[in-house]
Amino acid sequence: MKIIIFLRFFIFLFFVSFFARSSCIESQQTSQTKQISLAKVKEVNNSERAYFYKYANGVCKEENLFIIPGDRVIAYKNLNGYDYVAYLTKNGDTVSGWIENNRLFDVEQTAGDITYSDFFIKIDGVNVYIGQPTYELKSKVSEIKNKKIELNYIGNNNDSNVFGVDFPFNNYAVIYISDLNHIIRNDNEEVVSQIVINFGGDYSTSRGIKIGDSVDSVIKKYGGNGVISNIDGEKSITYQYADMIISFNINSAGNIESIWYNMIPWIRLVDDLKCSRNINLSKPISNLKQCD
Image 1 (cartoon, rainbow, N blue to C red):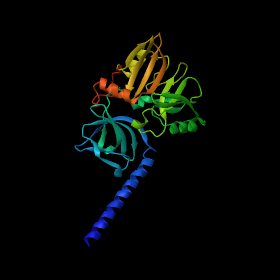
Image 2: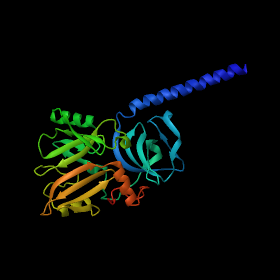
Image 3: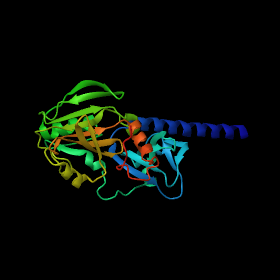
Image 4: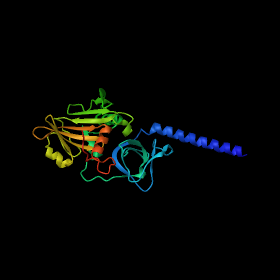
């Protein structure tokens, strides 16, 4: 009788484990669809550990992988009540995975600091932003402009494949997509990784800066935490937020001649955080030193 009970219990555990694994495998197929993109610093709340999940599903818990109250992460995606986050250890190693977002709270930004919203720009009526999935960009252009866009392979840069986008249909702005940082950001396709606004375009940033505006206007709108560089006579002021930068190139008259939005390699962000002594994200990720 004991043997029969044991076998029934063993079979029960087997099926529970089997269905749990099946649910987790199904989550693998859906965890990269319908994700909401974001880039926010969040902190573990309460007094309990926050466990990582392999996928955005309660059955996919990583029992031996967790962070503790006070730890901070950068959240890049949201799905089904979970955030896909990147956590940096004291040594600068990166741990990525899903965490229940009710275990995290948003870290408040100081007024005026650079945020994720600064990497959005409206181009010919279409909202384009760093980290935007290819399918979304195609869908928006088709919906608003009633045109189909094509991708043209450019080459490989920073170990990522780069494509040019034939939108907008002029020379005043250029959009590039790539798979840069796709593991850290949990991207399942190429995303917008660079936007260039050239002279002649009537486009403005989310804070109202246009080509031809003075560098003083930039500092007034974006603050004094930008990194000013002057390399071979080419002057610029750059602002950073996580693994994204916005650079304003300045001509000899002190006016803006081009605007560049870029995603930078994750390793560069880690280096910048180390240089700024901010590997634990205790300070804003918009006030970073850029180190050689």
